[in-house]
Length: 178
Image (cartoon, rainbow, N blue to C red):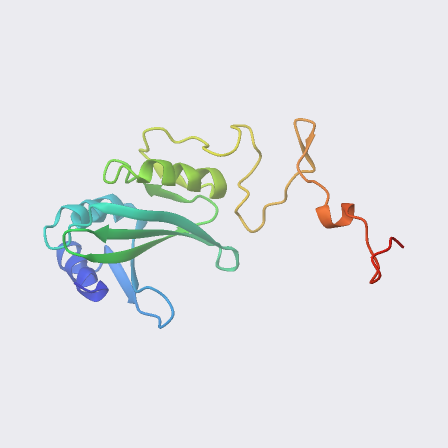
């Protein structure tokens, strides 16, 4: 089943109000968008419908579209039985990005969602253990946001280090130090 057929099946089951904007771009995977408030219901349909059977969440990531003032969550799904995949995108406002958790639908979403929470500040409602996974709990901000400014130090420790190329001695073309 191709991506368009998957999209059509979702629209038949959940209507135009739930799924919209099927897009095929020549250099990208075809994808469709789902409204955030309907995501868990659509995710269950994608997993449980026998013709779709998307039992595997390959990847879950997020993109910061700062100029459009939105974050975009991207899900790559795969069906081993049906041998097909699909890409689902969900747009969220940057100010308060929130989407239902699908950790109960695909176990792999558990850590993927925590990563996006940690690095971009996306809140996955009803997540069983939504907390930072890579950074300390008191880390300020979300470092993968395009407007993030890293502090010079954290708890007295510098957050930057010198460029190693600047630490190396410079040799001239004859192999001698200047």
